[in-house]
Length: 154
Image 1 (cartoon, rainbow, N blue to C red):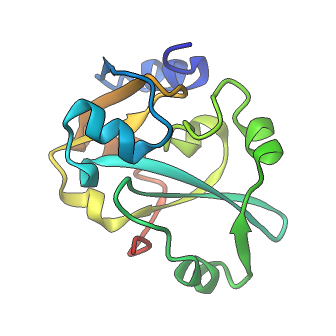
Image 2 (cartoon, rainbow, N blue to C red):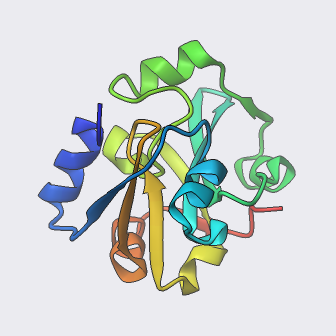
């Protein structure tokens, strides 16, 4: 499959320099980090959540879990993990479990963990289980500039 077309078009439209690292098939962002010898804290993963009236994506390091309590306090409503059908509908050009953590490309509300503010390079799932998209930390922060930042990783 390769990088999702929606993500590719978004990055190109926003003039984001990136490259794609191919690797053996993996099942999650943490395993992708291991397969490519990239530090897990530099791999951004998307966790899709349901909320009152829609969805929100939490972007955290591959080595972390999402602090749902923090997101609930910020949204003033409960959140829960989205199911596979909901994720497939929101991200139709992505494999399950390989959602790119660039929610604006898919017009989905989001939070991003503050730990990415200081990373020199960021890697992210490209929409399948065989590729990681690599970009500079500055490029990632640029495309995430309108996304709310918080300490949401545990």
